[in-house]
Length: 159
Image (cartoon, rainbow, N blue to C red; front, side, top):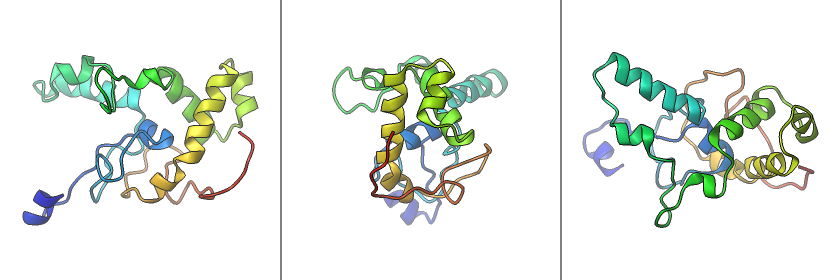
């Protein structure tokens, strides 16, 4: 942010839709910036975009970025999957809930584990305060965070 201010440039945030949905982002870290370019791109699609970029544009994304297991790097050897379902599962649940407006029981009916669905929807609920502070981004899906998504900051609701 200091360099952005010094050089009068726009700082882009790095949080994707999956991370923003469940709060795996830090307000003064990867959420810092003025524009959230990939805030409506699920994590698995971010990886697909990186592979495509490398195939078509001379490997601008280091291979280690693509092959290293995702991690918030809050402690040594920590991986996101230590506390989250695999991103393929997480992104599928998030798409059903956020974009298709399905409830927890409806998502479970689609074959997802009840406890996993409850965990994901709980994380989505408690991360709302972070999303309210996020930089605006590009709307790519049928429902992105921002004006298309509003939930109370504090409420008691069943998950």
